Image (tube, rainbow, N blue to C red; front, side, top):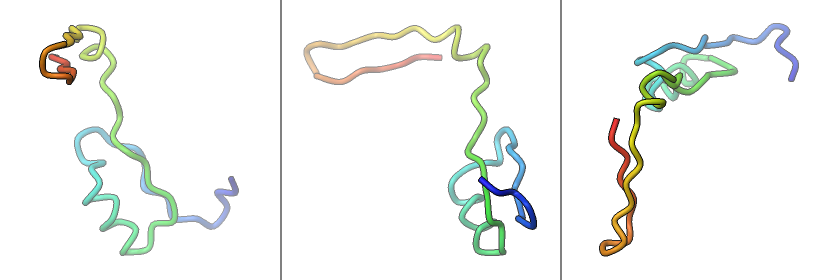
Length: 60
């Protein structure tokens, strides 16, 4: 990807939501980044599968 002469919205925690990225694109941003994952929270997550209801829950 060529970044030369592009307006880039830098990756940010807690403000990189879809509505914010769409607004930035509307105001001329060529490239936007999604939300960053806070990895230490992901490491503490516990995966639980509920076979009776056919969906998965993830608690952090």
